[in-house]
Length: 305
Ligand SMILES: Nc1ncnc2c1ncn2[C@@H]1O[C@H](COP(=O)(O)OP(=O)(O)OP(=O)(O)O)[C@@H](O)[C@H]1O
Image 1 (cartoon, rainbow, N blue to C red):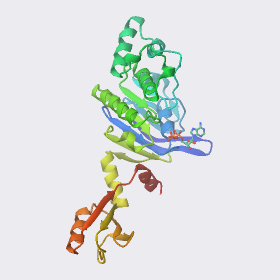
Image 2 (tube, helix red, strand yellow):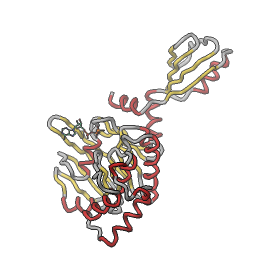
Image 3 (tube, helix red, strand yellow):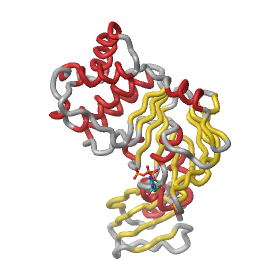
Image 4 (cartoon, protein in one colour):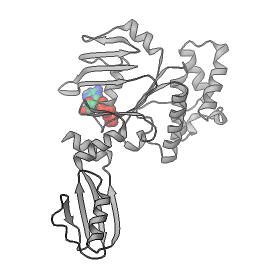
């Protein structure tokens, strides 16, 4: 649905995209992850022809829309008719209700008046805001506003949804609900590409993740596989507490005492079982043992380094 190759975008001396390549396939829910300033919005804006990259190629639905520093405007317009987009800093007219908001957008899309009512009703019901259809959006919570914005993006029944940081600013309940909405979109056959700088936003809902750091895609694939790959590099950290001191000499793990009966153990694999056997064989009891997985922030740092 989206194929980007070696995209370069500069803002003065800032190389916002530095040879970025990625691929979003039909039916995927793709989480585009990266720290602030990594180039996520720049990628999305380039994909939609809203800013001009310098080099590289962009394909939408198997059609080349950008190559050799130029957009093919005709192809871009045709592709965009099949895309729904929710910008990072989208605004709503606070004095309009969801029905009025969607009616205005539907009008802009040229959807005939006769079809609009049905389409708007369907969308508002699907996104669970039908009940609030006649209240002004100015009074809505952030989560409800995001749904109205998503309804706007869906008004033309797009095949591909591009959402820039759709869950930023939502509370955990709002995030969980928005994830449900994304799952529903996938069930309805849509491909979803959304950006975030927070791991929790992509977990459980994305089948594929791409991590962008400093304008380049560092990894792309299944989130668990990415975490595992990172863990092998960074190591599992086990925090262990025993009832008596244990002599760890001779082990291959890196053991740092945190007290006379508390230790931090780092190894390339999940070594909880080995640690358990080792400690028990030495006649000690385990009082507590936890394994610490790296946060996405740590993964980012590892990738930047
Ligand atoms: N209009 C602009 N003029 C100059 N520099 C810009 C402009 N837009 C973005 N940049 C710079 O380009 C880089 C990438 O920015 P971008 O907004 O794409 O990152 P992002 O990953 O979307 O970050 P965020 O999560 O903060 O939105 C950053 O260094 C940013 O400061």
